[in-house]
Image 1 (cartoon, helix red, strand yellow):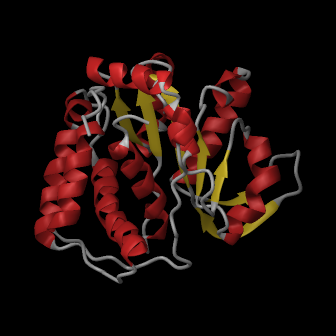
Image 2 (cartoon, rainbow, N blue to C red):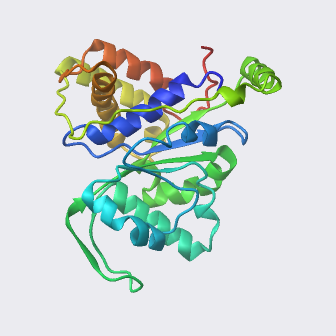
Length: 280
């Protein structure tokens, strides 16, 4: 793929957030300016990692029927739904049930399930997981208002992007050369236990300023306060420590300036501006 290292890092950090002790896993909504922007291919690169459920389609009923026990056991930390249009293309009542269930699962957590179709389930403790969903801008625009009203959208860290002319030309060249045959998977060695990561006050203050910048338009429009945006950015900082520990074998337990610089660099995409992918 061309110029997608930043997006790959954002997905890696989202997945690593499940291993920050005391934090809920980050949920990521990746929105491209138009179709054919590599979202599915990008999500596919992570398919071989453990504790993920990679879904082409899903309903609320199927979620509990197929995954309730794994979720309770901690064997699933994130759902990845690269074609989020699929579960949104069913009847309105089925879509509403799915969205409401996913919203509860990624924010408040769920302890008991009484659907009328399945045997009642009671989990030992409120269980939350994260979700990574992908969709194009036109579909995002269709659903945005209802998602804002219900609070569903605010549960996600929204990432938007587009291709500039130079990237488009590089992609055409890569297709002509059939470079897609050389695409490789991204393997992450997730730890068995979550890590406690501390964040110094000076870096937390920088994170607050960064979150204000990312949520500025939504706050001005009166759509939200920006609390979850700050939580997400703080969690990204801690997740970067976890990710680098996984890659280096170190056991660092404190966020440093380097972690902040990485998250600040990635914040270029944490908005609804559809900024062009940076050249790499």
